[in-house]
View 1 (tube, rainbow, N blue to C red):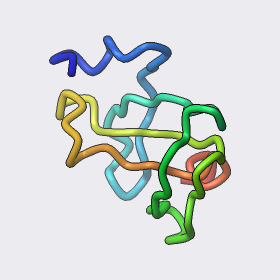
View 2: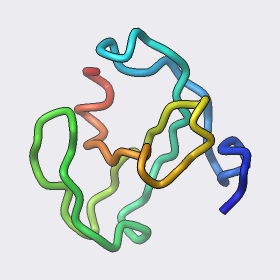
View 3: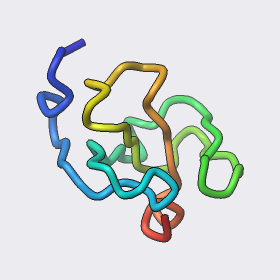
Amino acid sequence: MPRDAAAFFGAETVEGPSWDFGRPYILRRVGAAGATKNYVCPGCNGTIFSGMSHIVAWPQEGGGRVDERRHWHTRCWDRR
């Protein structure tokens, strides 16, 4: 795994969720073909099913550690 989270292909830096005071987050969009597991969205606590496109986001300062990454429904991320 790259040490610099920005090295993830297609990643961008965006404003994070309001509950995290908008600190910078790294965001990566996962297409349906790349979504191979189920996840729980922190925005709604609903399931993101395998094969469903979604967002992966994590705090920029964390460097992309697995334990800090969260998978979001795209609509939930947009409403953050």
